[in-house]
Image (cartoon, rainbow, N blue to C red):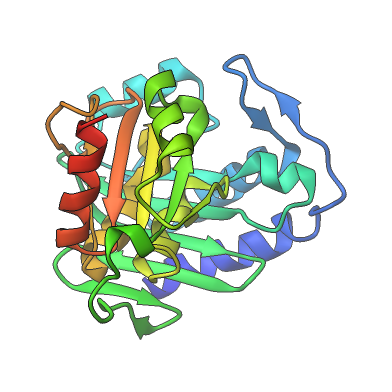
Length: 261
């Protein structure tokens, strides 16, 4: 973990922070934003990983779709990298973005790391071992507040119309936010900075590291094919709906409300 943390932190400070507020984004074919920093980060981190673990391949967000699919078919274990989570924020000068790296083996996330270079916060988790923020354990806090007193982070643009209207017209929680960097949102939930989470379409590199960090910190989340679908772990590159909460009883209340809409 020490080598991975040093690699990610040093690369992000060198390549991301030196370009922050000095770079413009371009629109990719899928409508998302990419910058020179995304591409440089992926190249630099992949090279660092290859030097240490030459036999472990990498699946990165900025690879072609064909290359990503080949990696999933051929590799039993691989790194999963989002070199710049929150690119739109980054390109707009909004200081909420991160680097997300996971190790996935036999379809299960074994290690997750999310680094926020603005705040110098490194969130890490090892399956079955726990989660940490800058070497301090991330543990469940006290009792979660009632649903009606919670802060919810929701990405509206990927939700269906009726659910969007319900969340705006009669939200079950006290206050609403949308932050714009998926991996970091999972980690802020794990740290108890808000209590509820909903996102309509996350790719593997969006949720792999952050969802493990939340689980190991004592939170509860699941990935669905829709509100009525079954919870599941990593499963290809199909976007998945994410529902999560800072602890299990609150998660159950949140999911019941969502299913009722």
